[in-house]
Length: 437
Image 1 (cartoon, one colour):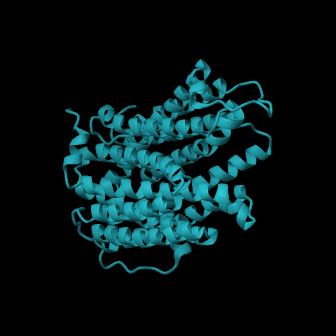
Image 2: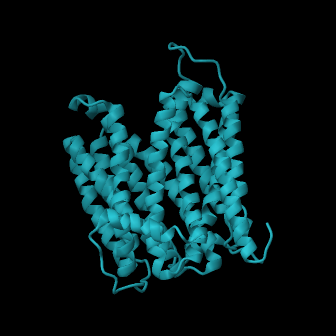
Image 3: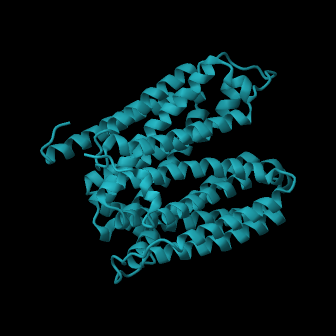
């Protein structure tokens, strides 16, 4: 079988406008969050009489909360209405929300910025089911691996660049004005890109929208759970986000307290992780040659686990004294043991890219069009739940005296268990198809 050229999708209106819309939206989300957290941490928290550490954790919860509250409703809207039209409405809403962000930056109002953060989470919640349910309507089945790989690559690059530029912009001499201009301008660019997404047909235009948010959230998960191959793929994706959230959240303290390096090194860890996921996502198409299959997912999970164990081993360092000067990025890179840290982080994230892309493609190829948006909404619900578990579990382990490398080792052990579950599911699927693993 000839491997489809995934980059040829960038020449197609079936894919490029959606990719740009997704990239700009994710970039703006992370640009705003990074700028806000930097502003809160270094300026607003003390002025308002708040503990910055508490505000940062509250901000994470505020952004995730809409995924719990509105994912079921977002799936219903995506099924009832024409999807490209909904994307344009959501992108218009993003412009209005970012104007509110500019006002919040200018007034340096913590409470207004928290409201804006919640609204950004809400618009991301409604956009999620649309972007993944539009893909199988516009792409052929042998293009789904390529399309999902490029979407995942774009997502992680936008997370990386948005987070970096958001923090740098807001702390510059004209940071308030620059950040305000950029968040509104990027939102406008995302809306412009969305105007070129081809129209689709509503899949269930007669669907009645339900006002029962929490009941519908539970129902949407209960409806998907009996479909084991789809639901296990969803849980597999959510596990990846739990692992990713655990590592990403530890990078600043890992760099400072374990490695003895400065914030630029923490940014290097983020960059390595994001690039690794992006490259792994793109490599999926060549590995599977366009075939929608989960046969390599267990091996990718096992590779994540092995690399996590190696990261634990190379992180065993003598305790740092309180007067130890922090290493700059050049000093960090000059030490061989630190290069091993980067190699482990890259291996974890590259394996993560190989792991997650086939799971999205499996969901899209095996889900009926009339149920697609609801299934993606279920994915958003479980993703957010697992990310909350990551925050709670990590906090509990730290409270119990676990070190950050110890947490990496715990994730390695748990990922091995996840790999066994996924392997069992894949074997069962292949057995039903008359194949052998």
